[in-house]
Amino acid sequence: ISVQVVASLAADTFTSGLSWWRTQL
Image 1: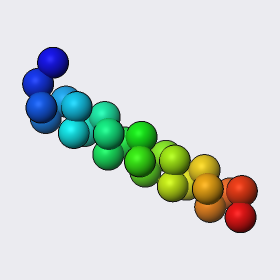
Image 2 (image 1 turned 90 degrees about the vertical axis):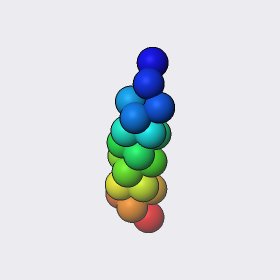
Image 3 (image 1 turned 180 degrees about the vertical axis):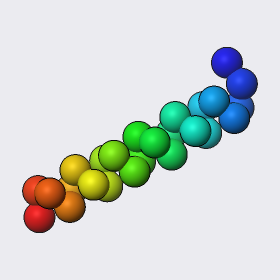
């Protein structure tokens, strides 16, 4: 696993988590 893949996955998780919080609020 490369650093770029991990960074991309982390950014994607962060974005989806952020949108999830927005729907909860």
